[in-house]
Amino acid sequence: EARALLQRVEVGRALARYAAAEAELRLEVARTWPDLVLGPGFVWDGGVNRWNLLGALPSLPLNRNRGPIAEATARREAAGVHVSAVQQAVLADVATARAACAGALRDLTTADSALRALSGEAAAVTRAVERGERGERDRLAMALVQARAARVRLLAATRLAEAGLTQERALGGWLAEPAPTLDTGTERTR
Image (tube, rainbow, N blue to C red; front, side, top):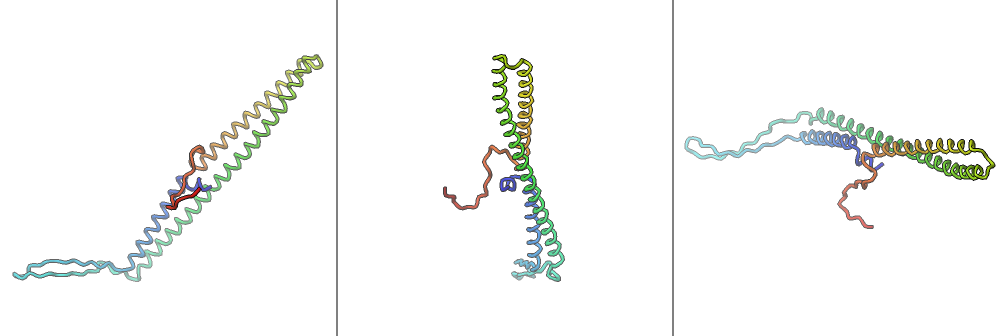
């Protein structure tokens, strides 16, 4: 689950939108205080050199900028809800893929067991045919049953491969590569 939350693109996009909304809110909160602009200047006034220091308040926030702050807060909360929804969807994809893999693996194990049991039974039928206790038709019938069991096993292996692809898609990357880690800046001990 952690791997999927780190690797899936839609989680990253949702987090980027949330970060943008957070930055916008911080900007609106910063605008509650007026910007003071100081401008030094040198003026030639009738042959007299003068230094001027000018101060300006380009915009005075009226009502402490409450309206834009409320709008930015609402956008940030909406982005937070979207992040949560995307994370829940990713986790649901991972759970579905895990269940599909477990079911396909169980089917493959059952098919393998049935095929092994049938191979022992087929060997017994073949020995009985060689001794003359059973007819060739019994051996052919057993071969047909074995072929059907092999087909069931092949279908189960195919379902397992498809479930593995579904799991890779849910994780957002190949299963063979190592899982990404977040760099926390601390050394890890083994």
